[in-house]
Image 1 (cartoon, helix red, strand yellow):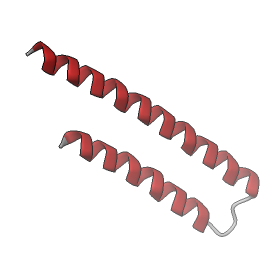
Image 2 (cartoon, rainbow, N blue to C red):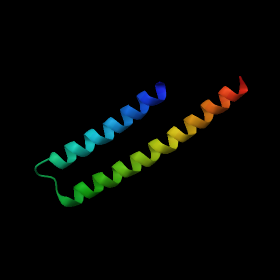
Image 3 (cartoon, helix red, strand yellow):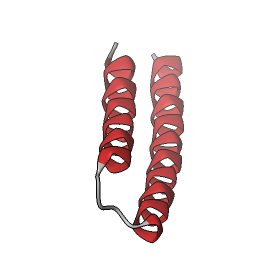
Image 4 (cartoon, rainbow, N blue to C red):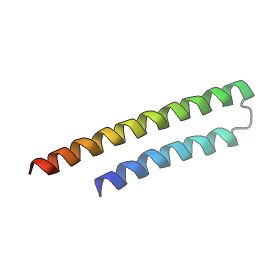
Amino acid sequence: MARSFWQGLITGGIIGSLVGMFLAPSMRPELREEMMERGRDLRRRAERLARRARREVEEAVEEQ
């Protein structure tokens, strides 16, 4: 349940940022590309953190 919450929060944040970015009327193409790259980096970091958290939870459950 907590995993779903965090995944939803991260996914919603990324989607909201992307929608806002594309709807911004005066965004330069360079800035848009930079924001896209930052979004991709954020996604990769979030995926790494999620994998690490999943491993730690699985290990804790196995120890029980």
